[in-house]
Image (spheres, helix red, strand yellow):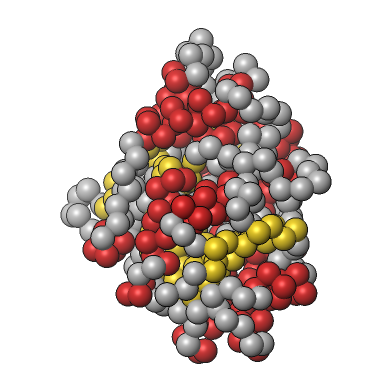
Length: 376
């Protein structure tokens, strides 16, 4: 069994929690992170929350030599480093593709062509690669995998997913790993590339690889000043600055929100489970929650129910209606999420009360509008 783990992006939101859990379980841990300013601001060294027991290497996944040094002597890699943000990926195409796709290609190229001690790779993927989730047609119970809703429908503020043949509103059901992939953003394409590159290389060269499809992760240490991060952190930043959460469409779009501590426990479970080799897994709760419900819950927990969510009834290019995960495949191996949503959000609110948060949402919104990615 491996004992020395490299976590790329290990100074970030998810990575740092992964580092904590690995150290708690007795692993030796090394971190490779470039301290991306959009996430960390301007730091001279690792953030205060990064566990000092981990070895820290400041370096970029696009720097082959830095990657080679970071891999020296480790026997497992958890590859979390990535540019995140669906909206921003739609216009920073080269940057996202370089970091996400090419950075992963460098890792795999080293593992395939150079002598290393790596015995195990865990690749961070995303539910975004599904596009729309799985749906049921109420009239006959048929399961459907529809494409994006047409702009002509959304321009009428008709946001529900409809059967293109009958016009009836479809019902969202849990999305399993077997659903066909239909990427609707550059970020999603990047994550699909990362997943498929790693699995192809793993099969071809006998490298044990597993891909984990994260759903909507929230929790402590998520950047409150990055307007391209998760919706819980974005809403928290707005509320801390006495601004109402900004919600696109009608706010009823549903997602699957999983606490970061549940997520990293699932990843460690998969890392240590030999049966997971060359498989992909949803890491999710299986419970749908609307974006507006998240906004209202955070307002309540912050004691700011005087603020009313700003539901703008505009839509973003490439956005989906509903997608929540089917956790059955991972549950069959023996792992299930355990942290209730309100408990996890309460922890986030308590932590965020002590943090600085610059509200950049309006700026990010303007950028998308100027580029034609927000539509009436």
